Length: 245
Length: 322
Image (cartoon, rainbow over all chains, first blue to last red; front, side, top):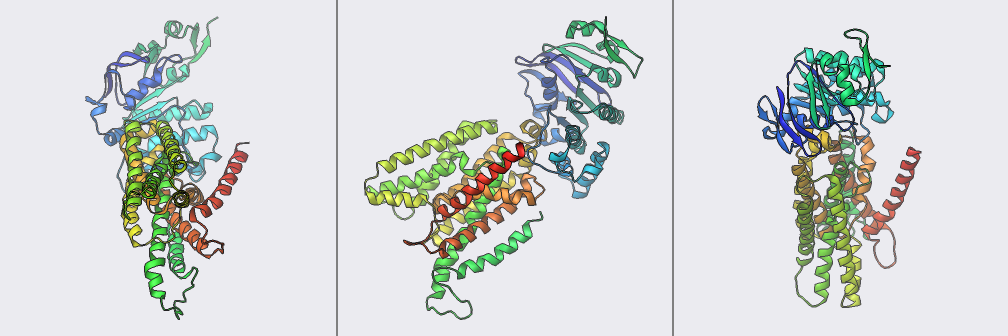
């Protein structure tokens, strides 16, 4: 269980309490500046709350030894980067840093992560020769290589085309079905509607909704939070958002 | 890990060669000179050991520095530790010329004191959860402060003789260094390189950015302290015994990086080996180049080599951006 209790970060989050279950794909949605990234960073233990706590299985994140926390929670920041022009396999292998496992175990985890990101064929390619979408997948592959119990990703779909975005969401759902906790910040409300088990809606640092997507992203909520008149078209699993005219 | 063996092999070949080359050539099979043994044991051997030690320290420090700042243009001198050490050394020369009797250990002791002072100030200013930007700014300020104080002492120097002594010393050289200097530099450099090796995994994580590094379990505070200690010991030791030797820490990691998988930790050892090799070769060249009025200074030689290389690098980077 990854949870926050009255979590506040000055100017960004106000008294957010939510507890997330492993096995769920949870989406964090909200307008620009709502505090989505701050909440995700606090859940990852990389942003120290001003008040309140973020905890993993009951233990406050800042009390857990950093390496142990890093083994349990994998975090992909927004607009991920890599300073040096490594090849994909080397970049992905950085996800093994919190572990002190054998080279064979590391290689197996890296191989599995590359396979999950459909990047085996690109393993030897330097990052500078990748497209934006390929780079985004490689960076997410780095998180998967750590085989964390929790996968936290900040807008992992931002640079992906629709086909890769769909496959990535399917993969994250699969990870959640396999018992991991998956938390993603999503801008695309249709992706959240169609793939998330649960949606947290933030507005100006406050938690507005914490419910299954059909409830949390209902048209009245969108109108209230985003100030946009929209309606959902389609059916479960294939919803699309359209302006309500 | 690929470039380690070739570099180590080249070092094994270059080391004995450096013992034989110089103003007096020594034929290992038929020594012509009576004092050959003395020249080898008291002049050339300590000098070669020193070149290898300082080169390894500066090369390793450069690789760690570039990894820490995630910038291929970073130089270990950036943190103000080298200028701090130089300031200490200049102070001892200044006092010596002013008639204060300090003894032979004064210069290296003052230089190490200067390096230690710069390290302590860096730790104080940037020690707590510091980002690399704060580190760099603090280092640059320390460097310019030390530079200004050095200039002040030079302009106030009591005699032309002291002035020339200070300036010559600042140029950096391995001339006339002996086992005493090896005894100072070797243990400090080894300690410094050990600190940098301990920082290796954290530097790898830092390639993904500071936030991602923290999420991978890196403690920014521990990393910052290891980097200060590692750079301070290696660079401080080198300035203390040989003056300012520039460009090794900048150029060497660049030359070696394409041969590695570009993980910062995988660059540390090859960079140290290549730095040792470069300094050894440059020192041989200095001894062999005919120059009226004595040897070419090592610091000058490396800057002559390094500055054009740096310009070429900038040109290439600019072309890459266009």
